Image (tube, rainbow, N blue to C red):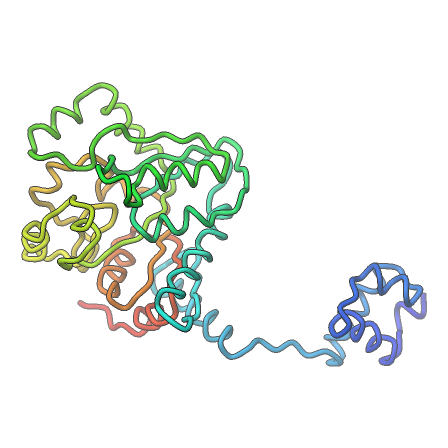
Length: 317
């Protein structure tokens, strides 16, 4: 007992050397030094307390963690994950999506209903989600279907995430956007579609990215909106797009003709969900800031440059 309670620095240092430098596990150290496993654990703790072992967080990781804490404090987030920038923008995107994919099984819990949006970023995430069954998880499509099978649609993202988490997948059997408002209204009134839209309110969590209101935005690329539509919404104050819905700098809904033609979750529904936002790039700064201020986000995964820009913002009056 005396040895365990009052080990010499030499013994503690030898334990620390084997664990931290030689890579032995605790069981191997216990056998080699004729100690019990709990004693090895005690010696490793003493190594830190006696400053035989020093713990140092690298400058980059300290910076990343500091930014994450600052984002949570500023915007009232439950968690934020800041990903260091890689050698090029494409690699940074991949790492942001990888981080989000690894976090997703922790974001959802048994019995949750997860709403899934669409786009390249969400598609990248869906392809990287670990195979991790979540009991009684339901995954729902937040916006209707798109015509182009080559694009990362909402249904493909929803299906892949559900498959990897062994969840029940419920797709939204309607077009994302109709040619005219009357047709969309009639489709929304169809019993099957009406029921699916009603059950979107069951989504207590959601995963999505966002885009700025520019002519090359993904809603234009996906033929949901035209450049003229974008210009009309920008004239009304829109700065960002979430799941096909437009918001202003404060995160308030910006409504127009496109909303009357769309089938899917609206801004109010999105705000009622705990949102996991996956985003990167300084070009999305204004849109991200709006989503954070508007209450759409509870958890965020983003790149370092965007995180710094958001933390250093001076909020508008």
